[in-house]
Image 1 (cartoon, rainbow, N blue to C red):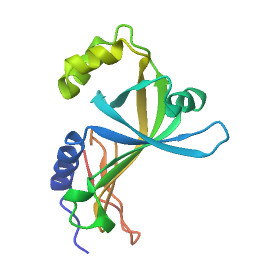
Image 2 (cartoon, rainbow, N blue to C red; image 1 turned 90 degrees about the vertical axis):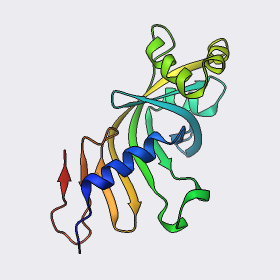
Image 3 (tube, rainbow, N blue to C red; image 1 turned 90 degrees about the horizontal axis):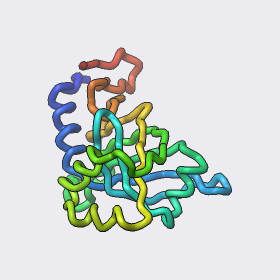
Image 4 (tube, rainbow, N blue to C red; image 1 turned 60 degrees about the horizontal axis):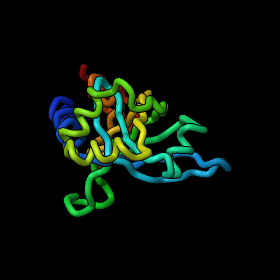
Amino acid sequence: MKQPDLESSKQQYLKFSEGLKTLMLSTVDDKGKPFTSYAPFVKKEGKLYIFISRIANHFRYMENNPSVDVMLIEDEASTENLFARQRARFVCTATNIGNEDKEDIFELFGERFGKQMINVLKTLDFSLFELSTTEGRYVAGFGQAYDIDLAATKFEHVARDGHQPAKTS
């Protein structure tokens, strides 16, 4: 089987991940059951940031259990094959970092979602969470899976047949 073009796949991932504005969150509820939700996000220095309300279930779940999975996934309307949607999943640790002295993060939210909207949310019960990623997997299609980090400085093809995967750095 022909090895994929890693640099091309890496650029495809970066374009894909930059084009998304929301992520899917998988948290664990108070009874140990999975809970799925979503949140708008920004990225900075290899970490994800979400700004969520205290009344949202996932707020409490992340405070009680910081283990979170995050998925970035291609829109159904733009995919060529629903069985092979482009996606990236990350294992994360969530930390409620509050809103004090976080103007650099709020600036990114303002650029992406509008300063006026973020300023309104800051007057409500919203708080910033930092999601530190520990491992990730990007799937570009059939036979095109890569072990990655958020910034794609790690980008390794996952071999199915036991051959050594290709790497790029």
